Length: 421
Picture 1 (cartoon, helix red, strand yellow):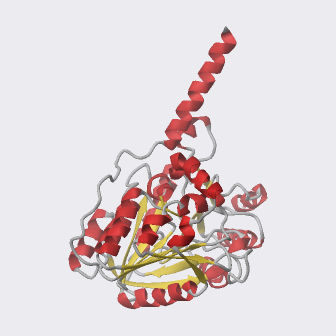
Picture 2 (tube, one colour):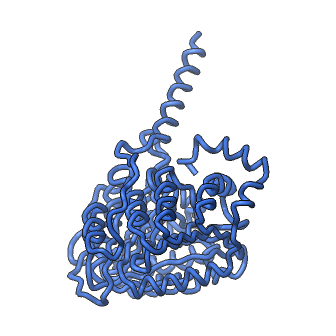
């Protein structure tokens, strides 16, 4: 009798924990947005700047970095030049050659008297040897894991920080899709080295990157990092308009969802998207279909056979039929895993960062995205996108209809857990 009670209690607790981890935020978009104005319309920027959180700032310079050969040297150069503060948040930080390089750079700066603060996701850093953490902490680096496994946060275990943020001296920032692991090294030359984009940020918008780091640092430590060492006065250094905003189930979880929907609905000519994980919800699909009905050209570049999650690939492909039928151009990147997160609308706006085009990013993960409103930058990123397109294989509606029965059955099985992929 007593064992029956104990087993029943354990099953009940497990069911409650699972339900809490599957739960989506209370604030949830349920109705399709209506197309009212174009991306080039000042009203679009006006609303983006208030609905998503931080205002759009002027006077910024954003530099695109392609693949590990460009990304890691730029990040490490900034770290090694730090004089006062470093704040660094990442999802993946693994042991390996590049993990070793970052550990050496961070520890050297900490020993030199720089305040070095690092937040790594507990799940994403699972392959990080404790020895790396010990070396950093012994040198004075403050390393904290985001949402480690404890009995009191089992209900939020599914909420991870997926943000990739680095700020040096409050003046230079970085964001994008790169993780600290060896598969991001190189130049996407083979299936073992991934295709990636990351971005160096200078100008007033860096303060928003620093504020984004503070968001999870406060959740983890209860401490606010402030003062001129973290938030110096920032003069204009370029002519790009930009803002960085965050999303989290703890607050503002629909910001990313809303941003994508507003941008798609405002498109009048073109939508170019590179997405490492593409599992759109019904509202996003409706928005893309409505864009096609307005005559907008929609091109989506997705991973091909080289992908680190077969379940995501199957769940993604289940949604392609109506999009292909409506004339959306879908291409599968062939050389290696495509891990970029890029949206370009009407050659006017570019959105980059950690956010994937899936329900997990929209509702469960902590994410950060940088929107840049600059025609010249948009044109340069379109050139990068089209270069990647040349290595993509077009996927047709006929191919979608003829996909294996095994995949179709798997799609049905994965349907209830799409938000978890």
